[in-house]
Image 1 (cartoon, rainbow, N blue to C red):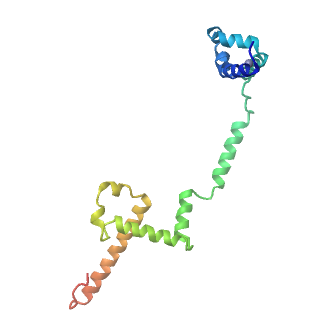
Image 2 (cartoon, protein in one colour; image 1 turned 30 degrees about the vertical axis):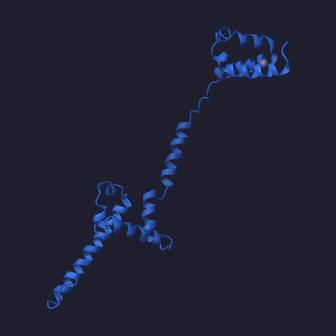
Image 3 (cartoon, rainbow, N blue to C red; image 1 turned 90 degrees about the vertical axis):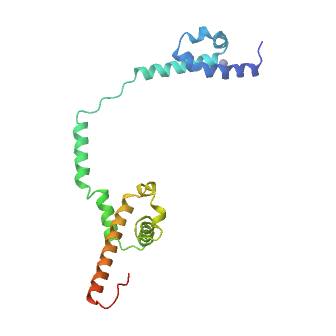
Length: 174
Ligand SMILES: [Zn+2]
């Protein structure tokens, strides 16, 4: 006779095989120790029957059909959402960058410009960062800022040219 402890251990083993028994009827005949336990143990039999009835319910369950107006309502709501959206995310980001006077943005912009100076052609350390991998890692925002910075440098150089052409006696101060 088995004692209580042995029976519990066997139940744990039996439960771990229940999924296999569920999907394959011949699994029990291939594992006689499971079949013997199922005969002896009412709990495991009940467990298997519960699983079987649950799966039978799932087999019989069918997803409900949507109401005939579901598609029409969905498309109407989508059109409403599109019409009510004031502007796209990119527009909002642009307006924020253009019109924001918040001071939180300033350090970020200063940091980005410093990064541009290091990565771009204008910096003293530009020679150290000419590796192509570094250039391709620059984000679109950094590239835009780089273009802005280059434009500012071009304007500055034009001012210097105009200043030096006004006064021919003074040497260029570059
Ligand atoms: Zn059992």
